[in-house]
Length: 448
Image 1 (spheres, one colour):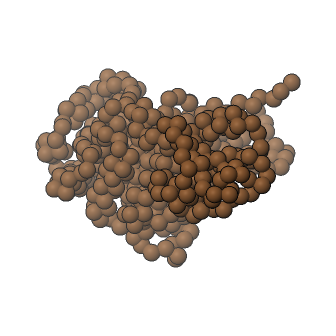
Image 2 (spheres, one colour):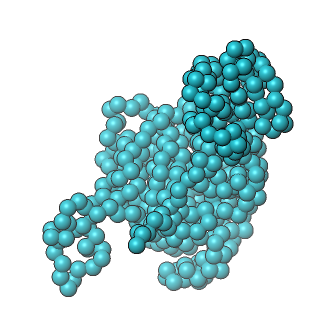
Image 3 (cartoon, rainbow, N blue to C red):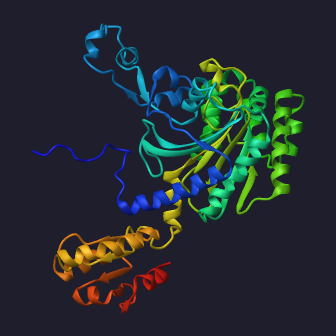
């Protein structure tokens, strides 16, 4: 009986065709990161649980993938009638797969503070894991590409991240991108006016679901939380605001709220004067971002053409490193969800043609002597960055040509006894069917 050879739910195998397309996105994103002066780092797939726990809110903590301790961990655990799954989990697991790249980055900064120059601009492109319910665009293992600036409170960093975001989606030719922006200080003022400051974390998590469950269901959840219905109705006044200038009369004299308006106004006016290539920056009062560590500007990026949720998001965190012992180090960053970006590009047909061709040129194999003769030409093609290969076996011509067709090879080169004598190549264009004799230099000019 065969074992279960299926991959776990929420994870995927990637074929070569998919990987060529994913690598196309990675290349574009990495190129933009480096043009803006961000330097690459990596952190381990696993972190100590204490590093991750308590950083993402109650709902986020629930989705952390825990890793069992090595060895006979049960023998070291005390199990009795009072044992719960939570208490047992503490005994048998002290490591977890990373939930995001931001918290590990904060830990990295603290550990390496004497080796890095502040403000520190880093990018990171790695897998993350969440014990979530799999669905379209939501996986248990997925890739994030993050760019962060830490060690600076300047709002110029927010402006640059918005420009970076716009440049990335422009380079990928994805149209109709909306960059939504809000400020946690404004949300804090709104929640204070609703007499719900003690429920801030829960309030933000509930508000973050507004696109999925609607305003009325958000209100119902707030009532369950214990908020007064009259105060909850203030939410309608805030949600009806489309312009930040209209917030002031609601915020009134709340100093934190006024500070949030100032920050948001500065960013919006700066981007308005600078302009964006193809994206639209919009203020959205309902944008909350459910993670605990955000303190200022928050962003979320969506495609207007494909309903798949956010394809990027981030924000300002003023004191995340303090939980690891380094105080007063502010940062701001944005994370790009490669898997959702891939789905948007796939549905809109935006991947370039022939992106999934591994070899442009295939040399047919007519025998050992002829095959060895091909190597000097293969070397010349590869020196010119032309992907090429030699069919390894002296199989029937039909089988070799089928291989070329299945791989999407553009040119097939045939070298037999006559070609070895003349020093010419017989080249077949697989798209047109044309077949010609030419020199290697002529062939290279045709391809390039």
